[in-house]
Amino acid sequence: MLNPSSMWRAFFCAIGLVLIIVGLECFAIDSAVLVSGVKEDPSAAQVQPNWFNSTPPIAKGRSVKPSDWFPWAMLASGAIVSLYSVSFRSNGA
Image (cartoon, rainbow, N blue to C red):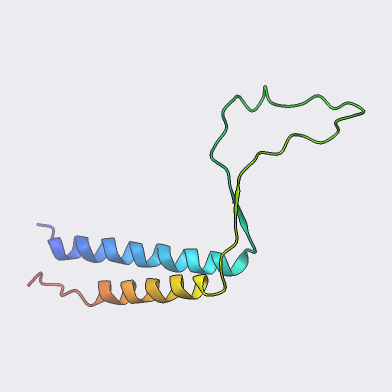
């Protein structure tokens, strides 16, 4: 039978890894643009190029610039949660 402790261990290990990956990604970017989604068919939204409008329309979104402390905080919390997941006992007691 599956041990409930191993399920919690896997859950916290996954959360820790996600936090570490988010922290590493924040080191690599200067800013991110969050776009809510496409409201219409993308093939129908293509603009035919003409002399006056040679660039396609740009989707509007919210720009997010992570602070200098944010990647370090994500890495630290991911490491703490991952170490917490390793500290679970394997016998479930």
